[in-house]
Image 1 (cartoon, each protein chain N blue to C red):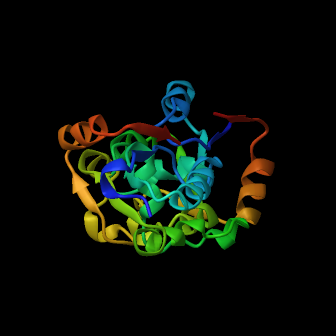
Image 2 (image 1 turned 30 degrees about the horizontal axis):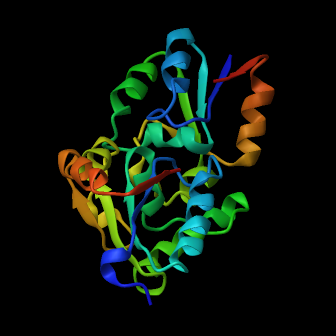
Length: 125
Length: 99
């Protein structure tokens, strides 16, 4: 068991839409791997990354597995401590918090920048 | 001319390049991550609606549905096509550009 103080603060910074590239899928795989090391993991969705959390996706229509369902369990099962979504990115895309498939913490850009600043490692996808 | 926009307008210049080159009577088809351009309430609603004055606007519905965007969340001037419709548009246009 790793004690709270010695845990490294790690943030996954998800910036891309879910199916046009493989980035989001790779991000989820890396999150699952990292969760085995009992570190303090946060995931932040900015830019097109917020589109990954949209409700009602059905990528079987384009022959892709719905890997975004993983976000429904990531906080409980993979010990991710925070899911952040940037408010400005949602608004630019005509989305609201109710459009998202799981509970998240919606932060203004300025607040998210200070969270990012607290991290030891940032992994952009 | 069939113009195919398949990259996210928020992340790339795919849509803005397309809009600079369209002319009267052209067709614009949004596919893959390009479909985020026709979502209601998004930043590109106005751009697409301006283009619809001179061009016909289509989107590939399997790509919107896959991404959780229902038909009532799409600007009404854009018309849905399925894969067969995509083929028909390609046949109807002598040339195409993928942006």
